[in-house]
Image 1: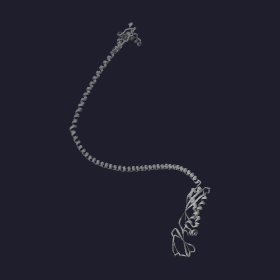
Image 2 (image 1 turned 90 degrees about the vertical axis):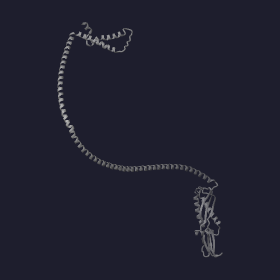
Image 3 (image 1 turned 120 degrees about the vertical axis):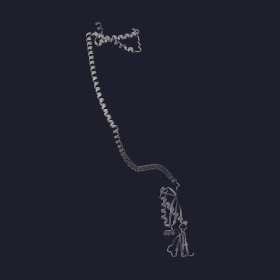
Length: 426
C-alpha cells in the first residue's frame, strides 16, 4: 500500500490507527494522510437505516394479544466523537446489514416490553404516547452503542381476537353518537350564531339607520340654519334695498313736495290776487246791488207784514164774532131741545103705560124687519115637511110671526111692563 491521502464521502467515517496515534483517529466525511504498513485505515458507514420493527402476538397488560408494526430511523452518530468512537468499538469491521439487525432486535425488544406495560386502548387511542415511549427507551439503550434513533412511528396495530374491531364498533357508535350530538349542537350553535348574527345585523342596521337619520337630521338642521342665515342676509339685503329705495323715494317726494309747495305758494298768491280782484268785482257788481235790493225787500217785507197782521186781526175778529154767533145758536138749540125733552118726559110721566105702548107699537115693525132681514138675504131656502102642518111661504110667515109674538114676553122679562095689559087698560 502506497502512502498518500485517503478520502471518504459524507456518509462514511475514516478510522486511522497505528503509529503516531494513541487512539484511533476518527475523520467523518473527509480525508487523511496515511502511512502504509505503520498505519491502518478502516471505514464505517454513517447511513441512516430504516427498520421495520415487528412485534407479533404480544400480550398487553390486560392479557389481550395484539401485533404491532413500528417504523424506526437509526444511524451511527458521526458528529459526536464519543458516540462515533463507541460505534467503532461495537461495529467496526461489521457490515451495514449486521448493524441493521442489531439495532432491529434491540428496538423490537423495547417495543414488546412497552406493549406489555400498556393497555390496548392506550396503545390504540394514544399512538403518539406509545411512539414517544418506545423512542425514549430505545434511544437510551442504543446510544450506548453509538447509534442514534432519528425517529420512531407506530405504523400498524392488529389483533386476531376481534378486540380492536369491537373497540372500534363501540368507538364508532360513540363517535356516531358524538357526531349526532355534535351535529345537533352545531345546528343549535349555528342557529344561535345565526340568530345572534341576525340580531347584530338588525342592530347594525338600526344603528346605521339611526346614524343615517341622525346625519339627515344634522344635515337638515345645518341646512335650516344655513337657510335661516341666507334668508336673514337676503331679507336684510332686501330690507336695506327697500329702506334705501324708500329713503330715495322719500327724498324725491320731499323734493316734489317742495316743488309743489313753491307752486302752491305761487298759486295761493295768484289766487289771493284773483280773490282780491273778484272781491272788488263782487263788491261792485253784487254786494252793492244786493244791499239795495235787500233794503227794498226789507221795506216790502215790513209793508207785507203790516198787511198780514192787519188781515189776521180782521180775520180773528171775524172768527170771534162768528164763534159768538154759533155759540148763541147752539145754546138756544140746546135750550130748545132740553125744553122739548122736559115736555116729552112730562108727557110720558103723565101718560105712563100708554106712552110705553105707543113706543112699543112704533118699534115692533122695526123688530119684524130685523127678524126678516136674514131671510131677505138668502138666495135659496129648502124646507122639509114631515106631513103635518103648513108648508111653503105660509110656514115661513108663521115662523116670523111667532118670533114677533115673543117680543112682549121679552119686554116683560126685561122691564117688568106687561104690554098686553097696558093695551087692554088703554
